[in-house]
Image 1 (cartoon, one colour):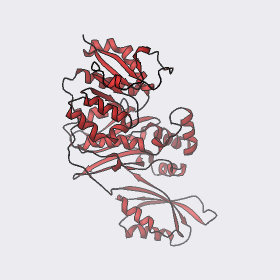
Image 2: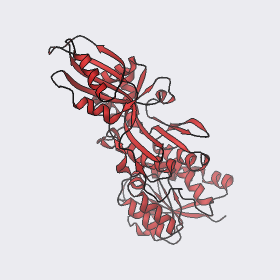
Image 3: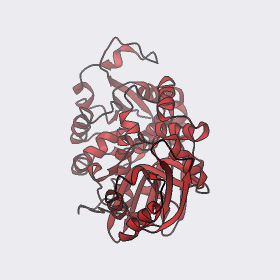
Image 4: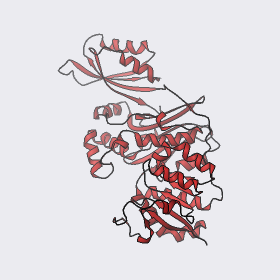
Length: 422
């Protein structure tokens, strides 16, 4: 059987994981799937760097053209991460008719239109299952298994670092800073955690998921984004008292051709399947008109889960005579500039007659109805108390406008957190 020559762009932990899987299970893949692969060249930054695996030196190069321009290499696997130079390298490989397999959500989300158009123009393969949720086959499910569905919503916990932090804050009552420091010591959070805790990582992934689910390109800069840095133990505890669990949720919905895509801290009812997804695990909850509601759950990150998804794509690419491309319409999508959901509002209010009726009246002026209210603790030195409101389903814009108009001599806003899944 003729071996398919492949080249690596990058060889960090994920690249080493792919190399290890091919070395360990290559014969089994050949026997089971009828395809055989040979790593021909590996682009690295430093030829002399010590790596997790003993990779033969003759495979290594520090010149990208020795991978991209090699006519014998049919499939290029990209492990570099980041938008550049990874995007440019992938586009060059596609222009040369090579298949690209990648886990790079930033490059795909940022340069989606150009990358997909290049693959289509040159009839090249583009495979990216590992770009969202690691080993969870959510992209393949949307593109293949759920084709007969009109997907109306996708909600997911698609960043393991933030889920770990919020899970521990919920279990232990610990502060955000304390748990983040632990996550960094354990290697679950980067020294600069901004991409995760700021919601950027989840926004890239949601751009890809919503584009595939709704068959319209949803640019990453159209995804509303809010991170978890402002979440307090008090928010988490108050939510628990309402029967709610806090997650950094990626939410995408389509209604009458209008798409909303947003990443932000979100409460979900304890009975919702997403509430039980703890620590660094990921899950995506999909609602289709024919399939109904279903959840995909598993390890969404890590070297070997990601390598597993990459090798799965590699096998698929090696077996395909014609490479499928995402069924995304050329027309631009219409993005929602407002949405409706239940809102959790925590504020400090003066503990004096008429203040609560003033707050509820301001909400009512903007069509926001209060479902329940709880006062927490005793008054502080300034004569204020913590008050938590749960609204009925209400417009985001209306809630924000009502809060902005409230007299700061009477109330001070603490937190506004959306509630989904009710």
